[in-house]
Length: 271
Length: 328
Ligand SMILES: Nc1ncnc2c1ncn2[C@@H]1O[C@H](COP(=O)(O)OP(=O)(O)O)[C@@H](O)[C@H]1O
Ligand SMILES: [Mg+2]
Image 1 (cartoon, rainbow over the protein chains, first blue to last red):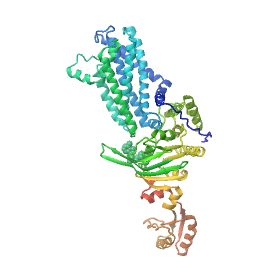
Image 2 (image 1 turned 45 degrees about the vertical axis):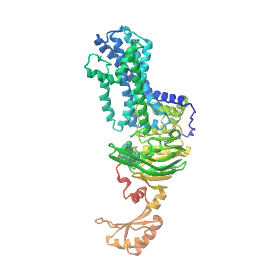
Image 3 (image 1 turned 90 degrees about the horizontal axis):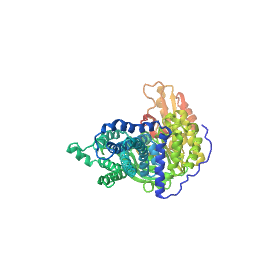
Image 4 (image 1 turned 135 degrees about the horizontal axis):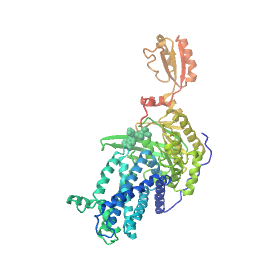
């Protein structure tokens, strides 16, 4: 091997404010995460197709539920689907992190001076970007079928999901870090947790007619409150108290996730 | 460049039932510009030491300053100045090589334009230009390793840690990787701290060899110093006749710089061998042969043996480094 000679330049480290470097780190991680999808969009196409299938095959079955608001079942179903997708996205983010943790790419980023919390957020924001595109697609297709659009409610709802998603993503990362090197804990918990969280929140089926114990469980499930808040926002009822509960739940999940996720990264990842 | 004091790390497994003292009270000072090889068998604590020095893992106790920063108190300062090529693959399977290099530049605060420029420089330097748009899954082991090294060099660190840079590569790729490492050093004067469990590498490439075993430093010096002090030269004589062994031992004792190998005749072997430790094998050989002839010992074969680092390790631990099978 002949190595061409070129002297090594000193590393430029521009001085910036902490906030500016934090957002730059988020952007760096986000861009890195999304680049493979942009380069090879086939996987992305499948991801997009998935909620649409759900909308078309599952939606019509819901005829009677969610009676009340103008758009009827669509007004009830669309926010539910979006919450459900928010449950799956962070799981993927955690899985991707686990793979990079076991592979060594994560370690390489951890020796860089990037902010650890920014690394967590950048990763989940990638999943959120995918969710955003999915949301836009779903809404665009649901409108002609009778879904009534409240733009402000939609925006607020997506913001709520962003906060919730970052929290869930960080929890998923925490789990990934704890389950290295075997990864089994991660696969086990995500399989066991995601479906109960989803089913016991009424995202796809209304809980109103379930037995008392089910309703009690649903009450302590933060996903329930987020789904309720989303539904209120999607019907434009901005004064509904469920919105406050939903916001609180999302903020709590985010605070817990980011705190413990960042702490785990600082403590060192045992691989 | 590195000052470590009583650096220790204990892992607890199975809820505290099993304790592994991976590194025990390591003291180490490394001057700027050195090429240091950290040599030891698998499980000696090499990677754990590197992961502490690179701020990835907090020590259980002890302290260290690396490239002017305290690893616990000011990890960001350390991170900005050091590079780390881990034992594993630094580039993710599904990212193109160039994309990873650009992302790495940005992680160190470069603008997008600068990061791209730097990525292209490194692609040229490491002859990865044709592989720039491939993903690491399609690369050979040696090519992947070059990508890992390029990623560690993006921000032109003053100090580069390499964890087993050549392990698992075929001989040709190993030579390539080494050629690059040595060239790099010549050009940039970078301090290099690498680990290896290959004896020859530590022997021929490094200026300073630190031998570790079971979490402790057991020897530290240039390869020649270690060999001279801890193992020394040796003369191996093959005897024609087993009955000469006793006389041969008597002669050997006059030259031996240390007690001679007590078993010159492994029983049952056809040609008995006498091993004589001497200060300098080349100059002692003719004298020893003359003395043997004078004593009537018939010598069949004679060989001056210079010690290897394995002999050093053997002298220190009673075990051979090469005996231990590499396990991850
Ligand atoms: N994350 C970890 N958890 C538990 N034990 C570990 C961990 N990392 C390393 N060890 C143990 O510490 C010891 C030293 O390991 P390591 O530093 O990887 O050795 P080397 O790199 O010299 O082969 C080994 O016994 C290993 O099993
Ligand atoms: Mg190792």
